[in-house]
Image (cartoon, rainbow, N blue to C red; front, side, top):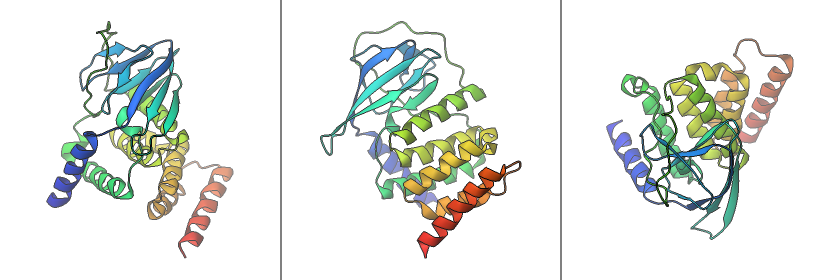
Length: 237
């Protein structure tokens, strides 16, 4: 276990040192960025460059469009952020299967450890946003379920843009920090679908199996879960 933690920690450090370029192309309404683990959210403007560990948050009337330049391929991708989301810039990237498996193992270590479980919500450290200092809004409260919902909303943005590996990891983190969210069928379905698309077939089977035992499933929900289980089991044989 100790070797796993050391190896996964090294991977997290190395992956955090690199990152694709992200620029804010367009904003509307209240859009702010968090730099590091401080409680200060600074106003964002179009043209700002975001670093791999920055965290962006849109308000009830806020939205933004990010342009992501993928260094490895030279491709450019646009990611639209609707209102009421929190998204870590480190999640807007593809992970190799090796990175995903190691990070998944690290998340399981956290979930099984009282030290991690009681340590509160952790958003990655962030660097500064390019440009002049901006006026900051009121400190964001990071200890209520509203934050968990904003994070889940952000996860759906990741899923819709094809970042399935980071979707899996972020949903698991939200479930760990806010267990009540794991009782909702739609949240569990998001996790299971992301596992499928991230090529985590065994994990997806286990997740659909757990979903089948959720209380209060409607007949359509039960049929959906059973259909996915049958398809995944057939695919594995």
